[in-house]
Length: 262
Ligand code: 13P
Image 1 (cartoon, helix red, strand yellow):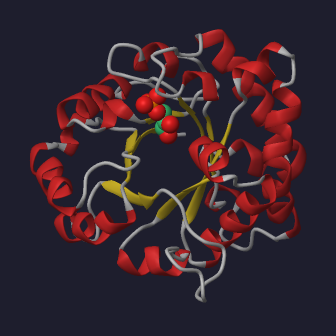
Image 2: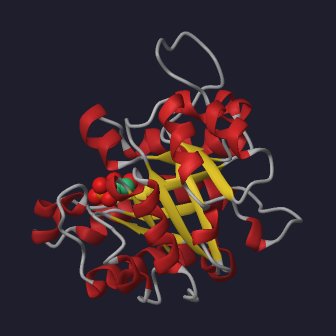
């Protein structure tokens, strides 16, 4: 499986800053076997797509969509609109959406289904709070976040294209590690990823479950990326703050290069 290095810009970098980032970022920092993704603000997707062209080596995504294709939902954007603007991926269920905007596990599943409906790949974010971890509830919480999403895949035949084409990625982002400078230890990340992998296999079958990349997110930067990516269960990283600067994101991409994920 290729190693994924994804940046989540959150509410940073409008169209002008997106142009300037892409002028300064060299995708060559990522060697063979590394796939780059950028989750930009919805308003910056068209600018990024225009700058990258159709077949560039950087995948483009949005950070949130509504589950309906269109309608009276003031301020929302649909997966179809994101797709039309040039996105191929969408984050769903980021912990900031869950915590600050009250998104539920069921809504996350509807959003993931909408992203697939529009022909894009959802990157479903899961993760426990510190309180939940300390209370020994990691598996209950993360399992509960995964279940409604995986049920929709379980019911859908994966079609003739084969198991490798399943449009799904998972990002394990412990809430206590996001934006705090605290990173999960390689052991903690490995254990959580192994649990998620087992749930994927249980719901999707071993072959389909094995093809879904599981990314780690939470205070990843150039100096700790390699250590996390050396964990066999970690298939990539989802980077917030350290993806905003082209040099720092390139540093993470180059740290990931040459490493073969299991
Ligand atoms: P930080 O890398 O800033 O901790 O953010 C992680 C994150 O939320 C990525 O989606």
